[in-house]
Amino acid sequence: MNPTFMTLLGQMISFAILIWFTVKFIWPPLMQAIEERQRKIAEGLAAADNAQKSLAMADAKAAEELKAARAKANEIIDQAHQRANQIIDQAKQEAIAEANRQKALAEAEIEAAVNRAKEELRKQVAALAVAGAERLLQREINANDQKALIDDLAAQL
Image (cartoon, rainbow, N blue to C red; front, side):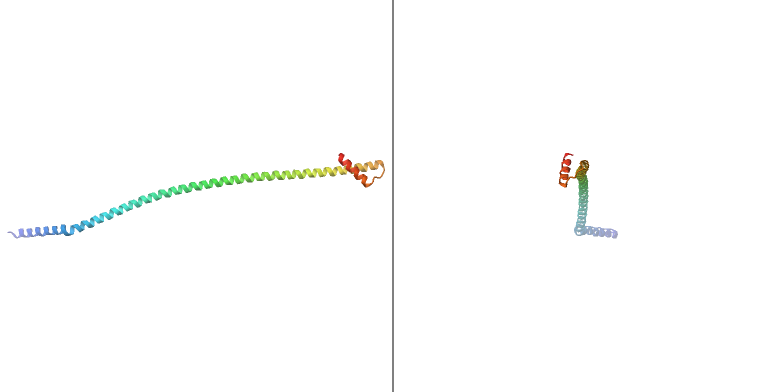
């Protein structure tokens, strides 16, 4: 036999033993490690996908809550405007009522002053009439008679 053939045969046997040893002892743990790594990567990707979906749902929910909050704020602002308008209208009505009350009081006061002035004028006219009548008659009238005459004239006026 040829030495190169023996070397080749030895190398082939050594290579076959190396392949058998690798397939029997090295390959299964290596494949198990690769499969474990693939499983972890898949779980990581699934977790990332779930997190992304959760983030999208949270963003949508936050946007919905923000929209609801804005709607509520607008509603509160509208209610505040309505209440302000009601307060303004109520104040206007109260001011009008107060003005009417003040006007009625002023008119009543004017009416009372007019009546007092008329009464005073009647008394003065009566006093003048009595004084004029006294001069005409050229006689003296006592105080009681004068008062009775003034009251009588005042009643007639």
